[in-house]
Length: 442
Image (cartoon, rainbow, N blue to C red; front, top):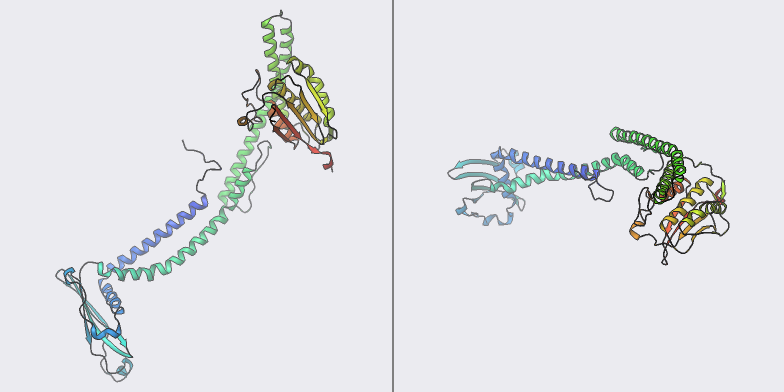
């Protein structure tokens, strides 16, 4: 199965892949051009012979014309022979005006046993005078023409092709980067999407047709996903709402059973199911019942009400609650949402933090609330997961579903609030929620 690349993986980018392919194409084109040049010269032996003599005479030092002699290794079947021809008495221009005979360059190639013989006449100038040299080369194979072909490749392939290839690569790189820019914008928008906020779409400007089609397909998929999630939430809320009444009846009927272990176990199970149903209902409603225009609420007053309603729950678990009002605790929020945040944090402390010290609930100073327990605390490796829905740590209580803190996180997000966790050295855990201050009202 193919592994899906993660954001941190060092997978090659599309820009890099396209640029690399363009570079490979340019290199392959250069090789093809070189092959064409070599093939063309191999099909024209006379041209090769002329180029070889021109190259050889360019290496001759005019000041050493009198010392020219045979050069080469006869044992290898290659030998150069030079013969100095009498120079013209006058310049070539004057000779032409006086109808005097004038030597010209010529080249002749002929096959000989074991190879070939190239003969030719070339001119050189020294001290303003023109001299003629008769060159003769005996050789075999293609190795003597390696420098000739190499110079031709440099002059007619490398020099014009390399700068052009570099310019084309730069242009193509800029063009590809410009074309891929809308795709990078869409990627950044996708990374910044909040799964808790439905109805989000990708928007790109001046995108090519293919990228626009991809973005449109993704937006369609997001829309279908939003509908599916909305349907699931509606079903969860409806099912939870419909289960509340039967569970309440079951609890009443269980109370009619004879006292004993069976009745106690059944009662505990029904209460646990009722709490789970209530949490599912809260989870389904967390992101929809908070209005956009939030009034100013008193966090302390709401906290006192929640503590009062949960006193008996704490006592049944051999714990106690203490409320601390630090003053100036007004905030822009929603009273019902704040009430549920308080309740879920306190219930979480009761369930996960048994201790002989009371659970401390506080409001203020400022638009903040906090719930502290003195239980075993939360392991370092679990702290990044505690707000995940349905996640349960090693200290979970029986019958818990891991929804309490997930509901709190959903409610704080809906209120544009922030929740933090602190685990002091003396033990326990402190959950703090920071709301929008009253001063931000318009």
